[in-house]
Image 1 (cartoon, rainbow, N blue to C red):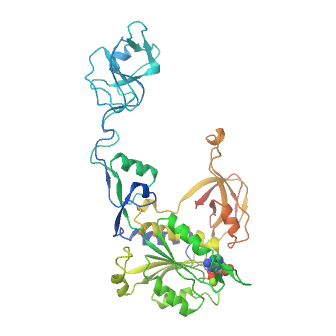
Image 2 (image 1 turned 135 degrees about the vertical axis):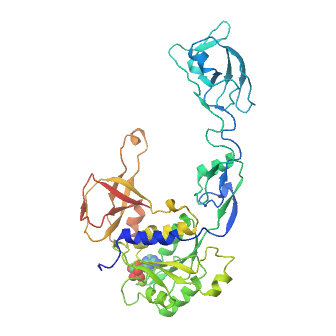
Image 3 (image 1 turned 30 degrees about the vertical axis):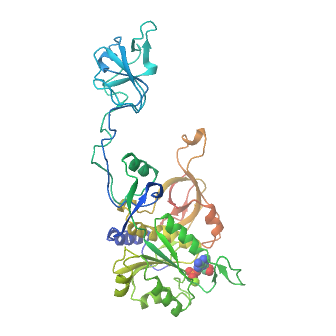
Length: 435
Ligand code: AMP
Ligand code: MG
């Protein structure tokens, strides 16, 4: 291992710094709410009216004056409001108003007595707060505008749209949202041994599993995957493929970045004028990972303006080692944050995402590289004990090295072994990389 390679942290900082200077995407689309999940908001979402728009009861019960109710005075029920009805009132002194959850509280009332807390006189129907209960002003009411005022910015551009954001938009009357166009991500597989998934591999050949895997990772990270034909391990094939890929916003190359005789990706990138930020990092798997940028031919900038709207003067590219687990890990660690930036996501949300878990069984490692081992984490079993379990529990999955797709397919995260550690003990808190 070369001492000149950056550590994981150093490499991650280089990537984050590069991503930080990516401008917000230029092209904006409108999508209906039903199609907005997973997209990135391109314009602020503003509250169209106060939220809630009227003082809202959070209980079934009786709107009243807290001071009268707390003194256990008898109150006459003067009327009733159900959800959907216009606000009533004003409430006369000495009276209460029957009210349902979600209904507007009548003017003059400042609290809602829960139905279950009211003593009702069977004779005249008057009620009072049960002796053991208290009631303070504001109780069981959400005041008008307590959540937001009309015109407030509820979501900023860069927010990832999920179920909660869709609900919020719906509540504000936004049936469609402005979102950033998805960045187009070229996926270039290299290797003479690769055949397409439909083909029967001849002796010595393997199916290209990285292309569909990376396409899935790209889609999940908010990009539009563009799978290019597999390039052979020759300078000419790689050069032609890189020329074709120049139209993409981001380029992912798998294979051909190790030190072997047919690992020709770095020379091919150099031939196109690439500048490298790192060629290798002190990680396993994925040590040969390459991060660089390729100058765009001036012509392609103009030509492709309508297709790839995120284009800067250079094209960001990653050379991901061909072993499937290496490709997946280096994508998550380095390519995903750049893709998130190209997709317009806010800086704090670009990942990678780490979490803490308790290690179930000890793990032996070797110091010198930050390791990312396929692992299974339980985030809380279903049933009564789920809340009582204090921490997620993680176990390493046995593997045959970074080509072991079966092991990775059984994993739901990667166990992180810090560079300085040669072992992790059972019961320790450890970091996991979320897939
Ligand atoms: P390389 O990074 O080109 O040295 O490849 C490392 C290992 O990953 C080799 O065993 C390759 O056969 C394998 N490999 C490379 N590309 C792919 C791919 N697209 N799908 C599956 N395995 C691959
Ligand atoms: Mg290869």
